[in-house]
Image (tube, rainbow, N blue to C red; front, side, top):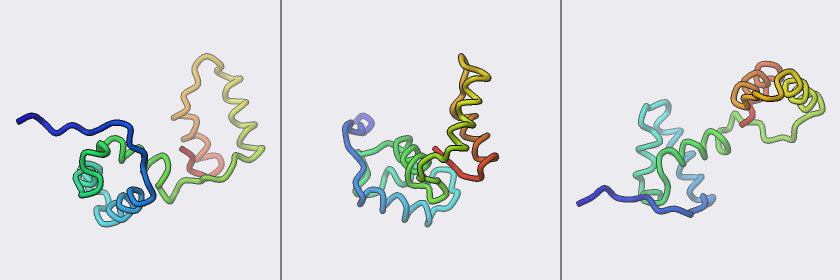
Length: 106
């Protein structure tokens, strides 16, 4: 038999988010936590471990700041783009902003 395939096109529900958050708490920093969560009833064959990791790190992580950007943050982004208009690394920029403004953004 072949490997089970994950289906495409599912959206995360509030129930899915609850399962993810509860199990992130239980598993802590376990190396395979996203893989383990992807195999739980209710999520199996619905989401890949990568999709679950992205959902947690970009949306569900309680450390994330979901407030709108402040004027000082907007100006910081504009200045960074002006300094290097052809090569903006958003990943590096968000890390810099976290250090500058003490707010974790995704």
